Image (cartoon, rainbow, N blue to C red):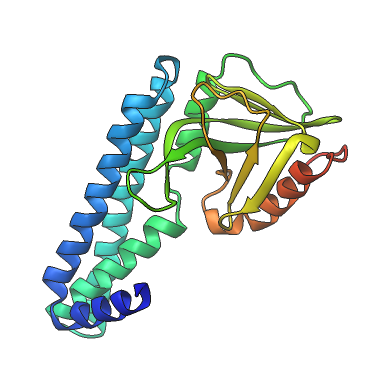
Length: 239
């Protein structure tokens, strides 16, 4: 059923690009706003700063992606084909690729989080910058989940496990007590554990690596930390 929906939408996109793009952006914006409003309601008071920083980061990437998409679509219109439908299609495609593949704000975001950390990391530690989100049940009848709190900080490899130190949330992950762990994207890990102590009860935790401009190039780091969360980490510095 879902495949049929996508095929029909692609046909509508080519036949009526303007209304199709407007409808898609409307649904996407509505879903994003719902998630943010829900997160604002559930986020602990001590984590409001990181939440507003996440919103600033989102709009930073949104504006940069719109600008880059407009420039690319305009160049294609000038150099290759001058057609309004093709221009709108290229605008949508370039925007989607830019928003997913490029993190324009990664340096600004990491430096801002570093300034909010209650305690600095010890020198010579084996760590990586991540965003951690606690997931709860979604509003619909399906199995989808939505964030109920979010924090950012560093995963630190220790002799007995992995420790997360964030702006307001700290958690020690013992691989022996993690019930299930899975790779959810090129830069993301999802884990289920009964020994978690989040500020709000959650069903699972998402850990997204945010240490470079290209999130899709974090697969090597994700695999390394996935292995460390699955088994006791080995000493040594992450390259």
